[in-house]
Amino acid sequence: MFAGKTILTGVKPTGTPHLGNYLGAIKPAIELGQKAIAQGGKHYMFIADYHAINAEKDPAVLNQKMKEIACIYLAGGLDPKKSYFYRQSDIPEIPEITTILYAYTPKGFMNKAHAYKAAVDKNRAAGKPDDDGINMGLYTYPTLMAADILSYDTDVVPVGKDQVQHVEIARDIAGAINAHYEKELLRLPAYYVDDQVAVVPGIDGRKMSKSYGNVIPLFEDDKAIKKAIFSIKTDSRPMEEPKDPDEILVYEIYKSIATPEQLQEMGDGLRQGRLGYGHIKNMLLDAVINEVSAAREKYNYYMNHYDEVEAMLEEGAARARPAAQAVLKRLKDAVFGR
Image (cartoon, rainbow, N blue to C red; front, side, top):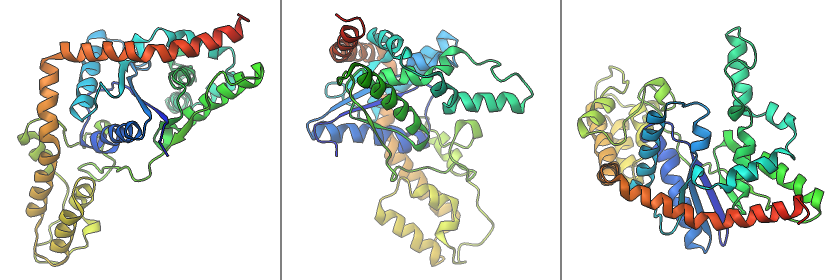
């Protein structure tokens, strides 16, 4: 599916990711990019800092979040010599392309965008005016995202189900421009949703999320990881009582990280009354530490040597810009009759 294709993924710096982010988004995105490159394609991975300023206005906080997310992807195995790894704001063609896209983007697209509708619904629930606190960055978010996608002749955009709409909007805008000028100025992107990507439960059974306060930390020390894992909710049944593994939260979290053999061992132990909750929490702890220890070491290195990361991002932007420049030229030539 990805042979010879251009794959693009953007990540918004929203704070230090947790285990659920790592297993459900970061690691799969890196692996998908590696797969595309191995099949003769291209992989663009960018830090969406323009998107981030819609919500985060403190430069110090934003800068810290950007450093963390860059280091996490590098620690997770992203190779900046093979992938195009860059900051959105280091590509000046993006705002220019966005401006052109505005002229072909129906306002109705923005009214129906999920992020805007969610903000309006939240205001209504609080008894506030619909647009209270909503800035134009949030409102026009999908058009900027369309520019992110269309600027590199992207073939495939891996997304979660809640992001499909953004790719569809990018495709609709591109289609409208191509139809108006009766030529393929912009490549029509497709979305890719991987149904196999893990949705990791948190320590309270809900989806793992910082907003719920139910996360297993990713790069903190072993003591912090152990504290989180040993606070996972369990009942008072004794070890020897047979249990259905699928009813045990520790087992559900273990599914996202264990090998098939490890999962079978835990499942059999629970069903046969040979493993207690302390045993399976230690099994989960060992699996998590084994998964993150090497990446944690790399993450700490990059955070302490961020000048190296800065150089990688600048080089990535220099490598990515020619593609965006070519798309911008095609658009300007058509729009202004050059």
